[in-house]
Length: 325
Image 1 (cartoon, one colour):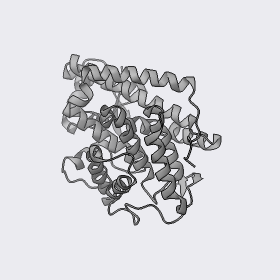
Image 2 (image 1 turned 45 degrees about the vertical axis):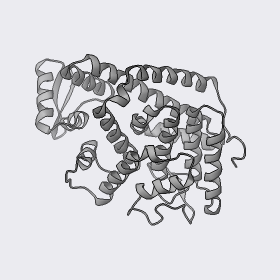
Image 3 (image 1 turned 90 degrees about the horizontal axis):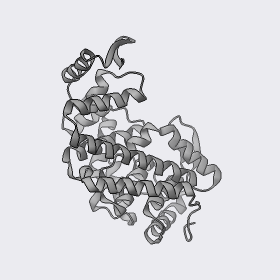
Image 4 (image 1 turned 135 degrees about the horizontal axis):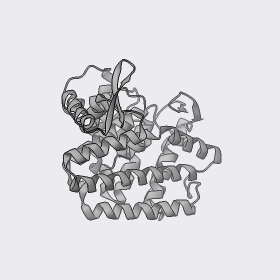
């Protein structure tokens, strides 16, 4: 299947996206903000883990994921807590993984799904259907007898192809999900490996929360997979993923610039205003998750903005929310 190039087309839209991404990467490299700021790195890593797991129906909020990774006790399903700890462990090991080694892929799956699935750290032995977030079957995974060979050939193609890594990593992500080599954890490992491949081009991608954008645009993510399945090539998925990468980089450029130039109060208002431009209202819980602060601190932030007349407190069901004034 991968003795030659997997099926996809390099369109003008893809070439334009690569040019824009390269420019954004250059902007971030010039400031060194993404990789040099340990607070931002940890925040992005936590967002990555929260988002990648939320896509797979993990019930923990960003605030709960943060608490777990800070060693705090929370009341939540043990399976969901274990998924967070396992995911954090393997993301922290990313710089030790060889993206072209099948053994490293299996080891990563073993860590990601440790004590959670029966066939942890090994390719599946039975058939599997690939489903979206609503349980609709997108396609059937490759027959298990062919899985090891196809994964090896896919990795070999990515390693040896001269095509830009931005494209190769997207192709890998799509083809990996098409093969669906594991009984469970394919989405989590596919997104991890996509990031790992991108770090071979630029190391900053280890700290870029692309999964957060995918989570925000989850319906589009599955639609792109569906379209590529229908068309028999990964072009539509490549276009979607490059756009998601570009959006994540644009956010990183803004955050880096703002962190350097704005006061804490100005930065908080910028983020809250940005949130309200995308959402009808914001709650205390949203602010707690956004800034990783206590409920009391979130209340103070919202009260100050209310006093300044930029937001207004409104009743949302049985609780309170805040809208733009």
